[in-house]
Image 1 (spheres, one colour):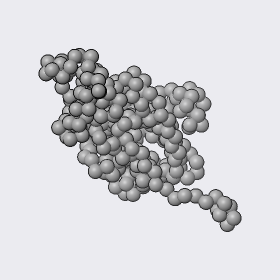
Image 2 (cartoon, helix red, strand yellow):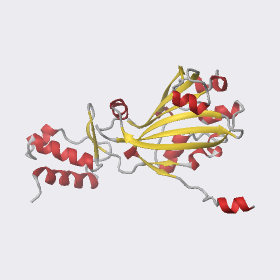
Image 3 (cartoon, helix red, strand yellow):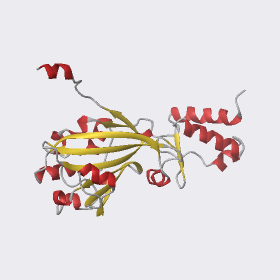
Image 4 (cartoon, rainbow, N blue to C red):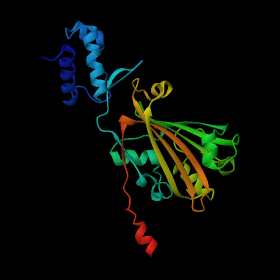
Length: 262
């Protein structure tokens, strides 16, 4: 016979899956379920922890226990950087993800702070700069509605972006086409990039910022962007709530043996 907390967790899970509790909706306070006769405080707490472990809800201080978005955002791979999106149009990368996911967006859902900082060893190495060099840091927090999805901080050499929209902290992308369009207009057309992904548990600060439960995982992204001659024009570090994204990469399969023979 299932434990009382398991029975309650299963009942709540069915209501979530049936849509009785919608994505983003807060579940009843523990005391309310206790008063409704659903079990003791420890029983309800255990049921909520089970739902959290199963990925159905998130819990955080100040936000309570909230039903998780069941369809994660599609985080495009190569296609999100298509030049036609930002050079010829106005579809910056995070908006390209929303469009591909069939989800609404507002440009103001990306906010940022911009500052001139001393490069960390990681940033200095990515740009090929001496440690202690100055760089511009453009730190963004991206939300879907009221829920944060990820952070992204891009680091630039001052000589590439001084006086441009990239150095402007106004909320939203850096004007039409975003940062890549700014670089393009300054004569630094992006040509290729390298992305590295690392999965890890969120730090307490990241969990608070992204409204994650304690112990929840994030995907850390390192993106290095180059011009055709190999100049690094952006190095970015992103922290993505792992449960809020699915990652998709569509690319041509290489055949290095055939290429070497030609």
